[in-house]
Length: 156
Length: 93
Image 1: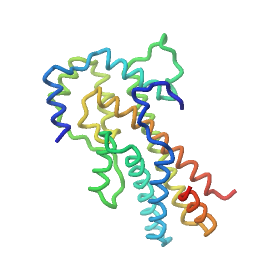
Image 2: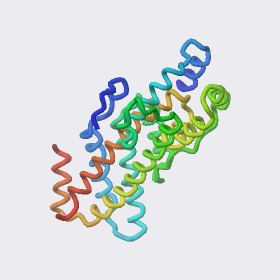
Image 3: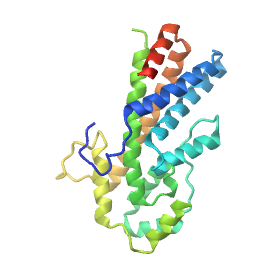
Image 4: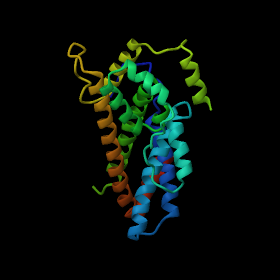
C-alpha cells in the first residue's frame, strides 16, 4: 500500500483514528439497539454502514471537500442510509470549458467519478482528481479496518 | 460559500490548471489502482482508462463496505459478553 507520493499522501488519517471513531459508534449502537427482529437487522446494517462512512470522514477531518460533503449529507439524512451523491449540475459553464480541453470520453469518465466521490458534483476536474486520490486511500483503509474487526469477532 | 468563491477565482485565469498538471494527477491516481499500479510509465495508460478504472475500484470498495457492514451486524447481534469485552478492550487501547 506504500506509495511514495508525498503531495497527496501526507494527510491520510491513521487507521487507529478511524477505528476509534468507528468502535465508539458501534458500541453506542449496541446499547441503543439490542433487538433482533428482521426489521431491526436491516436497520442495523444501514446504521453500521453509516457509522463507517461518518467515522472515515471524521478521521479525515474538515479540510477535505469529500469529507465535508459526506458529513453534511449524513447530518441531513439523519437515520437514512448513506447514499452517494446525486450530482448537482451547477458547474455547467465550467463543464463546457472542460469539454473543449479534454476528450469527451475522459469527460464522461470524470462525470461518473463525480457521482461516486462525495461532493464530486461541485468539483472541477483537477480538484476532483485530488479529492478522489485521497478518498480512495481513506476508503481502502476503512475496508481494511472493518475486515480486521470482522476477523477479530468471527468465531475461531 | 467558500467553494463558490474559489471557483470564481479560478475562472479569472490566474490559477488555470495546465494540461501537464492534469496528466500528473492522472499518473498519481493510476498509482493508487491495484490493476494499473504496476504498469510502467513506458506502457502508457490512457486518462480515460485510468478514470474508468478508478470508478470501478471505488464501486468495489463501496461494495466491500456494504458486505462488511452486513457481516459486522450479524457478528454484533450474536456477540456474547466475552466479545463485547474484546471491543471494549480495543476501545481503551
